[in-house]
Figure 1 (cartoon, rainbow, N blue to C red):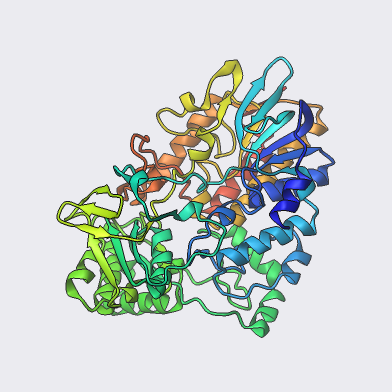
Figure 2 (cartoon, rainbow, N blue to C red):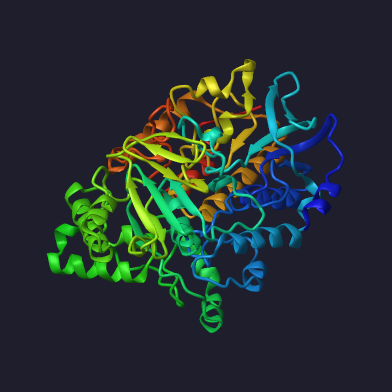
Length: 553
């Protein structure tokens, strides 16, 4: 839908409007919530900061933006008709195609009429006397609802680097996660990009094809594996879709991230990956080579204990470092691109298209700011300790305030006016990643303490929404209007999340999984590392025991 039509359809402002449920966000989680709540016969309003649906895929329009999960798995499973009618064109869908998919879902199920666009929620406060939430937006909306559900996303608050002089730059300045909607080109330009996480690694090869020269300012290198992306064969897809329901079931019940095997005929039990201790060096090398050539983030699952055993992790990391050295022709550049400061996979493994090959281009230069740090951005470029780089365009690919950023930027106040910001001052605490003690009738979809960013987000979103909807159905059946989780149950879940993380190497990554990319943010491992299948079993068990750890009124 054109933006002017969207604006017209949302011209009115909610003034003390009453709903059963208010939702913050209209990404995939917000859309599925609207669908399920309508099935329940409940009234709902979603407030969305952007002027369209899509969430992450609305904002992240940078060159090369692409999902690192395969499109046939990274899609909704709730409607067999939807999954059969929608035709993905690539193994790894690009941003524009995923946004079109989100728009199609919104239109197919007529969800836009319950969304207020260009409405940023600024405050959400629980009124204990009426057991309801009151929300306010930056454009003047006021709404009340029994339940408030945060569908704000895990990667929705851009992290701008604290580099002196950024506002002094006179050229074109882009932030990857706030990319303009107009077409951008770099032909004949001198371009600098700061950051080599997922966004930078995807954008760099595309920018390099256009720019007169590209300088990549890298502080710490990341591990990346090839996507081996390609157009999808319609005949292959048609065969795959004959078994879509079985595939979906496996994605939900699997031991890992919920991506499945994506073979045409699903296998009820895929061959178990072996630990390095059970294989010879030649066998390990052969398996890693097979996964490398197949492409994708499932490379980290090639050897079963690669994220738990330090020696196994070293073997896998050495394999990737050898690949980097074999691809990048300049030895000094290759060494600078080889990560040595963290175990592989403990920072989000990147999935790329010709990233390392790009450094063989004559118009690409890697600037190792670990050795020559950036001192400031000037009016005409970037100044490091040793030199100044004149630039026409500067791109900031510096990531997000992940997991908690969006929630903590809303003034959320629970029982007794307690602020979520204060409750989470030492790090986020929740029960199942779904509810925070002292904040009745408030749910967080894929919140901290859930598999979220370590999983196929669509699998996790559907599981979270379904669990919350089931809880609300159970409450309605018993005439209950209020639910909270107990501090004891919350403490028990936080301890479990920490215990599972402690069995892995994740804590050594210094990544945004721990908030390490945000100055002053508490260092707490936020996602649940036990896998989507185990997490689903735990959540189902809690429900089957009468929602153990939750209190109702």
